[in-house]
Length: 87
Image 1 (spheres, rainbow, N blue to C red):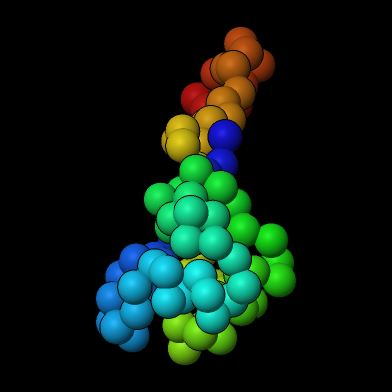
Image 2 (image 1 turned 180 degrees about the vertical axis):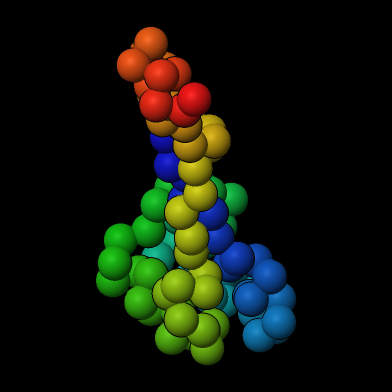
């Protein structure tokens, strides 16, 4: 499963905005913004673009996808024919 991670708090602090100030600038409630910042809600494309604009960042620098579990490895079982080719 893939999770959406964000750097909103870090960038918001750099810019010097409170959650309420940033939320007002992009047209959502402070509670809605808080939910996005803590990662329990994924923002819409429009909200993501507005956040990037207000935080003077790119959407890609604010949000990233990370795998919760390591990728599965593919393996092939050796057959007797394969063992003969190796000799």
